[in-house]
Length: 115
Length: 116
Image (cartoon, rainbow over all chains, first blue to last red; front, side, top):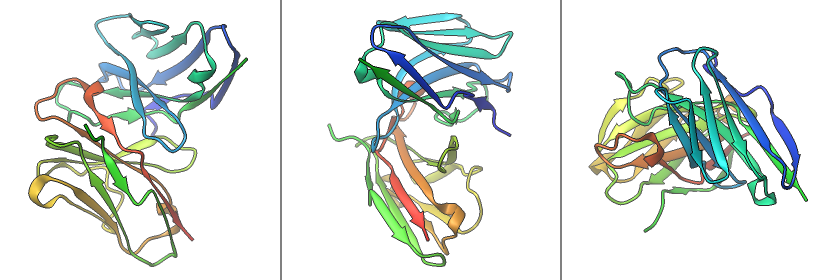
């Protein structure tokens, strides 16, 4: 009963191009969404987040889009750089009545940016 | 400032043995979480401590898993007896008390557990 789904296990993009990572969720109670980045042998690190009251949040090269009606979010990286190569996890939480820090993660997407 | 520290980084044990994982949260962080990622699957919540109290342990797979946080500082996660399906990476994370932003959750590097 996976509540957060990342259906693409991998994505390969040329340096300088746009990377688009997708995520779908099933629980309509989720109202806060995050993207984490993970390098090998390291823990996930926070990248960017979005609240359900917004449909877009931007931070430098990273933009997250949220489509609540479709229960879909995406992470855009423009321009992509080789250092962006990592596993990206989509995560969700429900603020209302839920435990802070209990996140529901997807399976991750391995992004490879080649020169 | 030191981050979340976990050890060992790797543990290889045989089925039926006992393993204890340790997590040292960031100093001053009252919230401590355990997560697990089985190979190829999602990262799953196991439990949440606030200081020494278990706030939510609904993610613990079964009674072979025991988590403790005596004194509200470091935490241990014991698996006894270990089974093959317990293999995976166990992550610990911490955050400050009263923190309302999920992005202020800091993860350790994880313990890779292999049960043979």
